[in-house]
Image 1 (cartoon, rainbow, N blue to C red):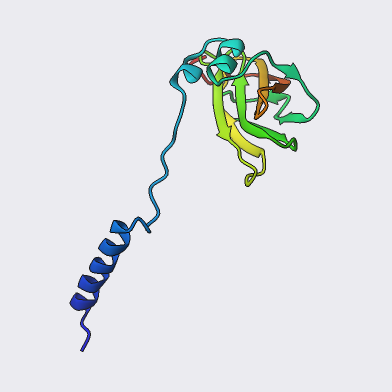
Image 2 (image 1 turned 90 degrees about the vertical axis):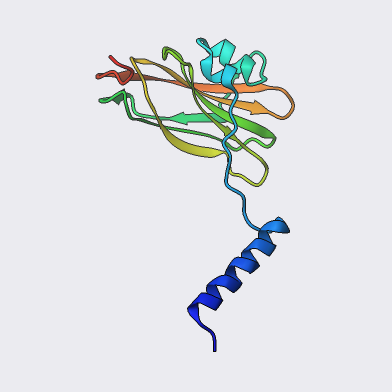
Length: 152
């Protein structure tokens, strides 16, 4: 007769065997470039991410409100349909730390992301696409903030 105790003991043995064979999913680990998040300017952030001189492109899009009532939670969307995108980044020009978010992209991932950023004051917000061939493309949008979110 199977008891609950025996079932739990057998389950633990099966889990141990699966873990030993490397067949259990691992916890997701966030990887980030510290220098990029500590950058104070757009150029420094792009350089720390491995990019060169950016060029404006209509193939990269950024969405967000024209006026954000609360700078602590400003919704921003970045997207591109270009093939060969390695990373999409969101940069806020006048924030103490320019880089707000970076998304790693592969061919298996649609390069379209929505997030919320914190803005201390009205500023240009940039969507930057770092391409596999080394090109850096961007789009920008000015977002006006009525109540600052970075201590302002």
